[in-house]
Image 1 (tube, rainbow, N blue to C red):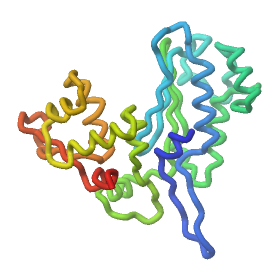
Image 2 (cartoon, rainbow, N blue to C red; image 1 turned 120 degrees about the vertical axis):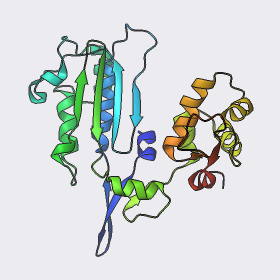
Image 3 (cartoon, one colour; image 1 turned 90 degrees about the horizontal axis):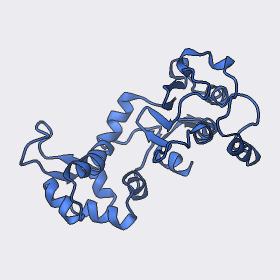
Image 4 (tube, rainbow, N blue to C red; image 1 turned 180 degrees about the vertical axis):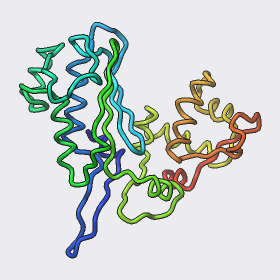
Length: 249
């Protein structure tokens, strides 16, 4: 949950005697969703993980294993779904730790907790989708505003939005230590080609390096391309943005 808190924004509203925070997500809804994926995951499939991806307007949790009864959740009424548990012992442990309730559908609770937010919008209610092999939960931000996001990424200060990127956040996203993040960012203080940056980091797989590191940093607004209109140009270089430079201060 600490990762979710540090990687999401909090809006706020001015009041006569101060301000009132307006979180993007209901914390209990996110916790319930994560727990739901861990206890219903199909552990007979080796090598899989519960994935959490955070975007500007939503967070998405994905795990192996569809509905235990073989149905598709998108075809069912959330209010009528029974609590069939694939891993009852794990569910009991989570309930004793107060991470979930012993009875009732966790999906219903995710919806109810999200609905309790003051800024709740019906068109942004949580969505659930399953196949025979996967289950996906999408929880939408109640404070997402495309115009505000665009202004924030351009470096302008936006009232009511707090989303200061930290080096720890970048490290978590890239699965690198704090020192490795610093080394990686330092290599792009001056515009550098991908091959040179990859070599400095001691990595050999060019496509994996670009997809996992460079593309992620581009998406986060930490770096930019010197030729954005020609992303595959052989003379393409990558350099830190102002936001990226702040991470080295």
